[in-house]
Image 1: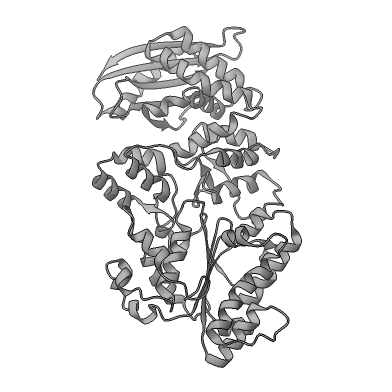
Image 2: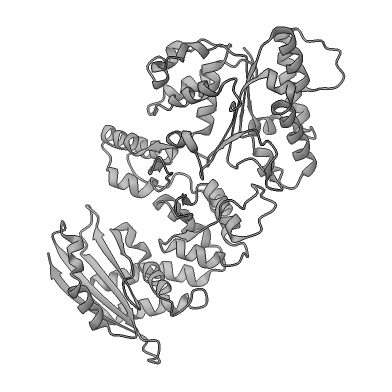
Length: 528
């Protein structure tokens, strides 16, 4: 048992012994299926706080010869598998955390050299390796051990991409590290000594000329997690169960932490945030500190064609098309708005719909991160509009028609330099941004445009809210009264059949040819 070779199971034991542990051991069944096959090279990329390190410690605890873990796993899903005991604590395991190694590494040391020194020192003790070799080479050491003992290793590398994120412009360090990984995972000798390779990181493996540097790895990403989708975070059933256990409101958990999804699993929640909310007994932002704001701001303020307009539309609750296949997973080569949006998917700031190739801001927690990130930018119109949202809401509740018209007009003017001013979808975007903070009181139900020049939105009060429901229709080149008539004629209140209480019908018209008074508003009260 060592620090890197054949680790113990204490790291994973601390996770399962925590007050909240959601069983993800079923992932081991997948890894058991690929051991010793051509599919044994597995790379999992997820955002921070999505359980990557716990999964790496779980794999180490299960496979490592340095511990006995049957009792630890016996009450979890993997114990039901017919292969549970076949691979349990049967392999020599090398477990590395690259982020940790970078912290402990002596100043001036090369990471690839330091990593190999650390592991080879433990291999020498375990396998009585010769001290005479002048050149440090971990792949050669493992090949020698395999030839002599037939041992095949499971190599687990957590935060494998820390080099590419933190040594962003140090090509020498990156090249040496990639050469080491190639030695470990590519070539005839590596096939002999590697039973399984499991890498975790935030970014997928860097590509060179559309080809991955480690193209034998099967990648499971936030864009395509494949069969590991349900292990990417907490599922809806798991969150429902936690909410029942901790007497927390499930619909609020959805609003705060849902919004990620894949083809096979439609709802995935950020595990760290859900667990913290259950612990604390309140819903809040748990990953939007100063570092997160700065990281997000550095990307959304890049001068890429159409990016600013896309971010504004995302803030308004809309979705944007993205080509997520073009990005080369290289933070030094961000060439387009597609690259930026793809990075934000991998970082967890955007949800991704693979069927539609669209991105969206997934939930309230991330929405707050976006709002915080733009506060220190030069996006003055956006900041003004978001801050004015509370005033517009208050004016709407108090049926102050002129104030509502002025508020929408102000928001419209603020975005005229960014969005297409008279475009129907832009009007819809303006309406959503004008009522940006309504999310705190309402569930917002969008109606798709169904005729020239209007967009409409329904606002259904949340269970804790005492505010009236709102049906808002925005038209242009018609009339505010016509907007109200449209709501009544189409009987939009049927969308609120289950709702009982006050309802405000809000008709707003924008007349692009009317001179100074471009926006008018009419508000009618109803009871349902």
